[in-house]
Amino acid sequence: MNFILSALLAGLMTWFITALGAGIVIFYKKYTDSAVGKTLGFSAGVMLASSFWSLLEPSVNDYSYALTLPVWVGVSLSFALGAFMILAVDRAGKIISSYANVGENRGLFLMILGITAHNIPEGLAVGVAFGALADGYSREALIGAVSVAVGIGIQNFPEGAAVSLPMRQKGFSRTKSFFAAQATALVEPIFAVAGAVCASRAVSLLPLSLSFAAGNMITVCAHEVIPECKTEGGGYSQTVWIIIGFVIMTVLDLAFG
View 1 (cartoon, rainbow, N blue to C red):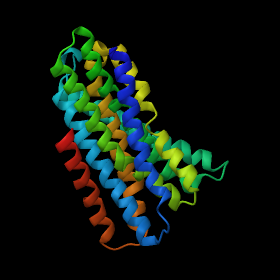
View 2: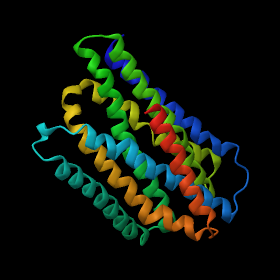
View 3: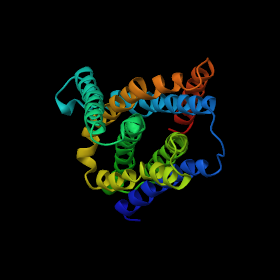
């Protein structure tokens, strides 16, 4: 099969699994303050684990010295740029909120932005894996590409829920919460195709995009998600759910990544 078409189908698969996770919101009936804190805590744990296992670790392991920068410089700088981008967006959100009634949803917007940014390098990773087939088909290369797509897809299931459930808590309808959450993964098939077409270039640039997305995710967690989950309901349970989210995502990443 054409490697570009294969990359597109794999990207659509990872999006579909995100949509399945987002669909949990349809069956979730009632939110209490305690449930809000637990859900946000779980979301934070998922995002933190994804930042390390899916982004920072492969960024370091796959770093190419063809980029001319030492690994510690390239990864650190791109991480910092990702972090400062989120802070800049937060600042812009505060300015916008002075002209429109969106201030109370700024944290939710940042979380959605962070997960969407995280999905871009995941799409590239899928595309690069299938783009490698352009140089010559082999059963081993195909199995490796399919494994990357399946691993990323499995990881996307809790990410869909991590967006749709907090949106529902904020008062959005189940329909809007579902469609917004599944939309965070629409970038994956797009960038899967881009990664397949530009496989040779994407291989060298992918580590920088991975650490950039990690900067996005960790900043969102530290600046918005964790503080908010601790104010919703209080107590130790929110911290426990951060750990649960982190452990579940770690298991998925190590078992299927």
